[in-house]
Amino acid sequence: MEGGRSSLLSIASIVTSMTAVAIGNGMMLAYVPFVLTRSAAPDWVPGAAVTAIAFGGLIGCVLAGPLIRRVGHARAFSCSMALVILAAVLISLGVHPLLWIFARALYGAAASTNFIISQSWLNHASDNHWRGKAMALFYMAYVIGLGAGAWLFGRIPVDGNIAPIITIFFTAIAILPIGLTRLPTPPAPARVSIDIAMAWRSSPVAFIGVLASGGLSMLVQGFTPIYAATNAMSQEDVAALMFVMQFGLLVIQYPMGSLSDRVDRRIVLVATCALIVAAGLAALVVSFDSLLLLMLVFALFAGAVETVYSIANAHANDRTDPADYVPLASTMLVAWSAAATLVPMLVTVLTPAFGAQLFIYATMAVAVLYAAFVLVRLRMRERAPPQQCETFELRSAQVPNAGALAEADAPSE
Image 1: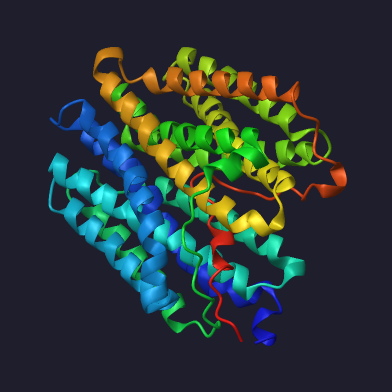
Image 2 (image 1 turned 180 degrees about the vertical axis):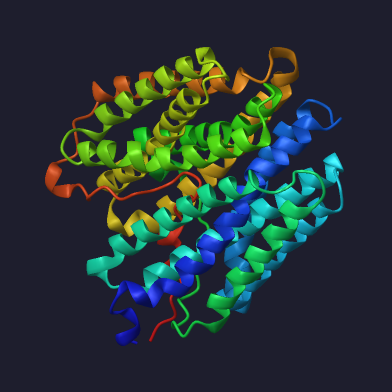
């Protein structure tokens, strides 16, 4: 076992599988809202498809643990991949709005299961001294996979069912590395235990930050292709926009994360919210004829939104006793999923009345409200002692943190 835990190469199967999944996901994140927006479906349908992903993810948070405890990680992974394939098959049958909404909810449930399995396996397979590098590699590979899927979307016919077929292809490939891995099976994941009071006591800023990031991430990642398609952007331009947005995460998160290791993380969160508002204002005024400038603006927009999640997670760990990490992770995971469902749902309901740009105003409003809350908390509580703070790690709100759920139900030796 020690030999299997000795280097980053030992987790290649997990990273490879999830990167393949991300390619299909990145394609469908662009394809589904683009096609629905261009179809005769009612105006609320594209937004409902975005909301369905988060709602399915919320269901997956609850069901994934019992499934894994019943059949084990490898079989559960195959089952979740089967759900991804089934969702793509439903979409390949033609544009049926309600069926597509159900398919995206099915994908959301499978995605939560995938994240819990992959992160718990990574935690179990990696040694303490390089676990942070392993998780950073996992997140970076997944984000690059999302970008690659968006890029690929721009190079296939949008008519017909080529996109879901390619998604099925990459999902089938994703099953192979896990099916052939020799990594030892991790302990069963912890039961999802919700303790909002504990999460609030540990860090109100972190708890509200994770709630905010759920809404922020689903708004920007989900509604941007709808907004672009509504403004008559071509398929190739939408694909380029979605591709560049994924790399905004790396450009913004690394410097802001490093800064949060040196100064009070709450100050960096306020600065990040200010960047979200600035990018949102720019997104409202930049012409769609200026594609390069538009891509830059939305890359900054997406990168700043994802950074709220990662810094809020780091701040939560700074303030929480290690014995509470598992219930904290459970609570944060469900809180993120709930906000990622409710905020896009509200925007979906209001979009027909206020227009496709409403998601930008909603994103800025959430950022302003969260920044105001953090400023109030700055006056009420001192900074966490630097010696108690963990080093910042790359995180993406598109891959909610489920890693701590790996530890609780390990069988006794």
